[in-house]
Length: 119
Image (cartoon, rainbow, N blue to C red; front, side, top):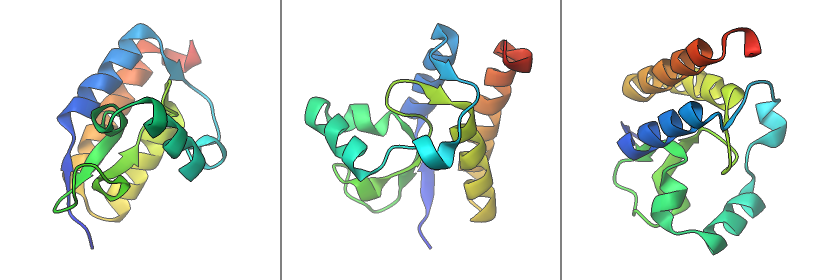
């Protein structure tokens, strides 16, 4: 099983998005998460550091400029999705990646504090 480190740049990016109100509070993440075509389209317009900023986990040992390097996507390349953070917490917990789990959990708590009851 792969090992991950927390992508601190992504954590900062997520906090900035939350502060700016660039959030989706209610979405079906399984339906709206970026697929390969969306990822490729984003990479055509942006560089790898911009792509990385949307992923809370970095795969240890993977090359920086590969999709394999980036895990635990937190949004749709425009807004952070609450459902994406929930998915990150769940997946990281399930796979026992405690540091990523806790980072995603803290971000989810920050989002919920700023937007209680979806306001």
